Length: 197
Ligand SMILES: [Ca+2]
Image (tube, rainbow, N blue to C red; front, side, top):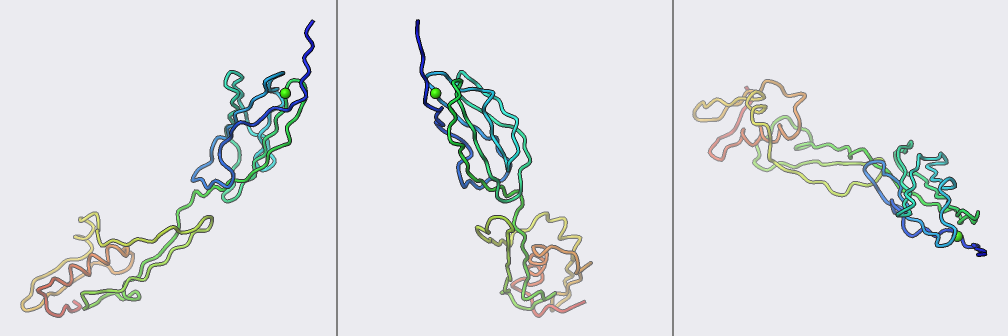
């Protein structure tokens, strides 16, 4: 007759997502568990997301528990992993937090303080950006503009010696990048002083 004595709780070999992780979308929570003697009690496995139990699948062959679904919050989420073995030894619940940030930063661009026209080849860009959940990593600007078709309908140029003259279909509602390109087109290197229509 064999008598098994198991006084050791299961061990959490690894888990995801990592503590303090910053993620763009809700993840599956996974944990690899080990209990050499009596084995992990699948029915005792629990992953709590902000206090609510997640649906969980346990693969005994690999010792991997995988969650699905759950109501994740924008910002900080608390996870708790509860594990016990068949003999009833429970591991101390593991608690950690991860952050979810699904929203891109908001930002704005102004050209020469929002001026509708400039006679200068050089303009000053006013750039601002903010992010409610994480932080803004960088701000980049470009003078590349697409699609070109938008520009053709947004403004037109007429050659009227000795100066360029520009007309525009609309000033309001154009994206800053379109304004940027329009200004570039308003100011060819050979032009003289542009004037309003
Ligand atoms: Ca055990």
